[in-house]
Amino acid sequence: MTAPPGDVIAIEVRGRPVAQGSGRSFVSGGRAVHVTTSAPLLAWRGAIAADARAAMDERPLLEGPVRVAIVVRPAARPTSHFLPANSRRPVPVLRLDAPVYHTGKPDADKLARACLDALSSVVYRDDAQVASLRVVKVWPGESEAPGASIRIRRLEATR
Image 1 (cartoon, rainbow, N blue to C red):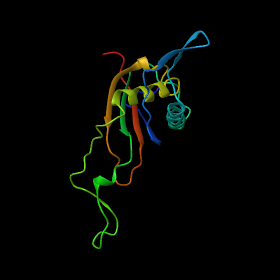
Image 2 (tube, rainbow, N blue to C red):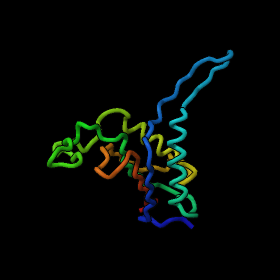
Image 3 (cartoon, rainbow, N blue to C red):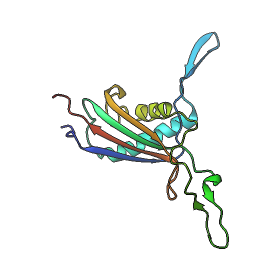
Protein backbone atom coordinates (compact mmCIF):
# COMPACT_ATOMS: atom_id res chain seq x y z
CA MET A 1 0.00 0.00 0.00
CA THR A 2 1.35 3.44 -0.87
CA ALA A 3 0.01 6.95 -0.39
CA PRO A 4 -2.11 8.18 -3.31
CA PRO A 5 -0.87 11.15 -5.33
CA GLY A 6 -2.02 14.36 -3.69
CA ASP A 7 -1.85 12.95 -0.13
CA VAL A 8 0.27 15.50 1.77
CA ILE A 9 2.57 14.63 4.65
CA ALA A 10 2.93 17.77 6.78
CA ILE A 11 5.85 18.11 9.19
CA GLU A 12 6.46 20.98 11.62
CA VAL A 13 9.92 21.08 13.15
CA ARG A 14 10.84 23.50 15.92
CA GLY A 15 14.40 24.53 16.65
CA ARG A 16 17.24 26.35 14.99
CA PRO A 17 17.78 24.99 11.46
CA VAL A 18 21.32 23.87 10.68
CA ALA A 19 22.77 23.77 7.17
CA GLN A 20 24.45 20.65 5.87
CA GLY A 21 27.89 21.71 4.70
CA SER A 22 30.05 20.05 2.13
CA GLY A 23 32.19 18.24 4.68
CA ARG A 24 35.90 18.39 5.24
CA SER A 25 38.76 15.97 4.82
CA PHE A 26 41.93 15.66 6.83
CA VAL A 27 44.59 13.11 7.76
CA SER A 28 44.52 11.64 11.25
CA GLY A 29 46.90 8.91 12.35
CA GLY A 30 48.08 8.40 8.78
CA ARG A 31 44.54 7.79 7.51
CA ALA A 32 42.30 10.04 5.45
CA VAL A 33 39.15 11.04 7.31
CA HIS A 34 36.11 12.76 5.77
CA VAL A 35 33.65 14.44 8.16
CA THR A 36 30.27 15.69 6.95
CA THR A 37 28.32 16.16 10.16
CA SER A 38 28.50 18.11 13.40
CA ALA A 39 26.63 17.73 16.69
CA PRO A 40 24.18 20.60 15.91
CA LEU A 41 23.54 19.16 12.43
CA LEU A 42 22.92 15.67 13.85
CA ALA A 43 20.51 17.13 16.42
CA TRP A 44 18.63 19.11 13.71
CA ARG A 45 18.39 16.09 11.41
CA GLY A 46 17.26 13.97 14.38
CA ALA A 47 14.49 16.47 15.17
CA ILE A 48 13.32 16.41 11.54
CA ALA A 49 13.35 12.59 11.46
CA ALA A 50 11.45 12.32 14.77
CA ASP A 51 8.73 14.74 13.66
CA ALA A 52 8.55 13.02 10.26
CA ARG A 53 8.07 9.61 11.92
CA ALA A 54 5.18 11.05 13.92
CA ALA A 55 3.64 12.58 10.77
CA MET A 56 3.96 9.29 8.86
CA ASP A 57 1.76 7.59 11.48
CA GLU A 58 2.61 4.00 10.49
CA ARG A 59 2.35 4.71 6.74
CA PRO A 60 4.81 2.90 4.51
CA LEU A 61 7.64 4.79 2.83
CA LEU A 62 6.61 6.75 -0.25
CA GLU A 63 7.51 5.10 -3.54
CA GLY A 64 8.27 6.88 -6.80
CA PRO A 65 8.73 10.61 -7.39
CA VAL A 66 7.88 13.11 -4.66
CA ARG A 67 7.48 16.87 -4.37
CA VAL A 68 8.99 18.55 -1.29
CA ALA A 69 8.20 22.11 -0.19
CA ILE A 70 10.25 23.52 2.70
CA VAL A 71 9.66 26.83 4.48
CA VAL A 72 12.61 27.50 6.76
CA ARG A 73 12.65 30.03 9.58
CA PRO A 74 16.42 30.09 10.28
CA ALA A 75 16.58 32.56 13.16
CA ALA A 76 14.53 34.73 15.46
CA ARG A 77 13.86 38.24 14.19
CA PRO A 78 16.36 40.86 15.35
CA THR A 79 15.09 43.69 17.55
CA SER A 80 15.58 46.13 14.65
CA HIS A 81 12.51 44.54 12.98
CA PHE A 82 10.30 45.80 15.82
CA LEU A 83 9.06 49.17 17.01
CA PRO A 84 10.03 49.44 20.69
CA ALA A 85 7.53 49.39 23.50
CA ASN A 86 6.54 52.79 24.84
CA SER A 87 3.62 54.49 26.57
CA ARG A 88 1.33 53.82 23.57
CA ARG A 89 2.69 50.31 22.80
CA PRO A 90 3.03 48.08 25.85
CA VAL A 91 4.95 45.49 23.80
CA PRO A 92 7.22 45.75 20.75
CA VAL A 93 5.33 45.64 17.42
CA LEU A 94 6.64 44.29 14.12
CA ARG A 95 7.57 47.17 11.81
CA LEU A 96 5.58 47.52 8.58
CA ASP A 97 8.86 47.67 6.63
CA ALA A 98 10.32 44.55 8.30
CA PRO A 99 11.58 42.08 5.67
CA VAL A 100 9.66 38.88 5.01
CA TYR A 101 12.49 36.86 3.45
CA HIS A 102 15.70 35.87 5.24
CA THR A 103 18.60 36.58 2.87
CA GLY A 104 21.58 35.87 5.10
CA LYS A 105 23.41 32.69 6.00
CA PRO A 106 22.70 29.77 6.08
CA ASP A 107 22.20 29.06 2.39
CA ALA A 108 18.80 27.69 1.32
CA ASP A 109 20.33 24.81 -0.66
CA LYS A 110 22.36 23.60 2.32
CA LEU A 111 19.34 23.83 4.61
CA ALA A 112 17.38 21.78 2.07
CA ARG A 113 20.12 19.13 1.92
CA ALA A 114 19.91 18.64 5.68
CA CYS A 115 16.11 18.27 5.49
CA LEU A 116 16.13 15.90 2.51
CA ASP A 117 18.79 13.66 4.06
CA ALA A 118 16.87 13.53 7.36
CA LEU A 119 13.70 12.44 5.53
CA SER A 120 15.45 9.55 3.73
CA SER A 121 14.36 6.16 5.08
CA VAL A 122 11.67 7.92 7.14
CA VAL A 123 9.27 9.38 4.53
CA TYR A 124 10.82 8.05 1.30
CA ARG A 125 13.53 5.51 0.58
CA ASP A 126 16.10 7.91 -0.86
CA ASP A 127 16.30 11.64 -1.50
CA ALA A 128 16.95 10.83 -5.16
CA GLN A 129 13.14 10.38 -5.35
CA VAL A 130 12.70 14.15 -4.90
CA ALA A 131 11.65 15.27 -8.39
CA SER A 132 10.37 18.71 -7.33
CA LEU A 133 11.84 20.89 -4.60
CA ARG A 134 10.86 24.34 -3.34
CA VAL A 135 12.75 26.05 -0.52
CA VAL A 136 11.83 29.41 1.00
CA LYS A 137 13.72 31.16 3.83
CA VAL A 138 11.55 33.56 5.81
CA TRP A 139 11.73 35.41 9.09
CA PRO A 140 9.37 33.93 11.69
CA GLY A 141 6.00 35.58 12.14
CA GLU A 142 5.21 37.34 15.43
CA SER A 143 4.00 34.14 17.09
CA GLU A 144 6.42 31.73 15.37
CA ALA A 145 9.79 30.39 16.43
CA PRO A 146 12.76 29.28 14.32
CA GLY A 147 12.16 25.93 12.63
CA ALA A 148 10.81 24.49 9.40
CA SER A 149 7.51 23.53 7.80
CA ILE A 150 7.91 20.64 5.38
CA ARG A 151 5.26 19.30 3.00
CA ILE A 152 5.80 16.11 0.99
CA ARG A 153 3.48 14.88 -1.73
CA ARG A 154 3.78 11.82 -3.94
CA LEU A 155 3.75 12.70 -7.64
CA GLU A 156 2.09 10.65 -10.37
CA ALA A 157 4.84 8.47 -11.83
CA THR A 158 3.23 7.97 -15.26
CA ARG A 159 1.21 10.05 -17.70
